[in-house]
Image (cartoon, rainbow, N blue to C red; front, side, top):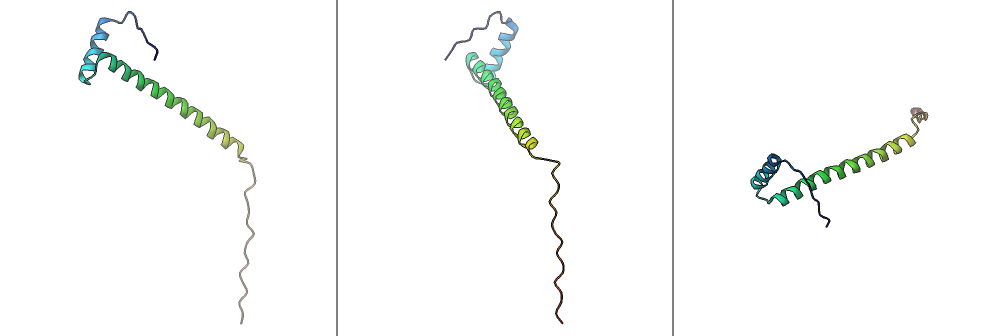
Length: 82
């Protein structure tokens, strides 16, 4: 797995991240991995939804909306026998 290095993180933000990690019972590194996982998961979901939306739009555009409605012939009542 590749490594990520983040430089010049302000001390206040690092302290806040460490506090957040402690609140969740994780190390700072585990908390960062959790945040990355959540962000990447959201992005993958958005990408998948966009792909699905395009597929649905393509399917809908292929259906002719100007096609005449199917008409059914009327049924004549059956004559009564006397």
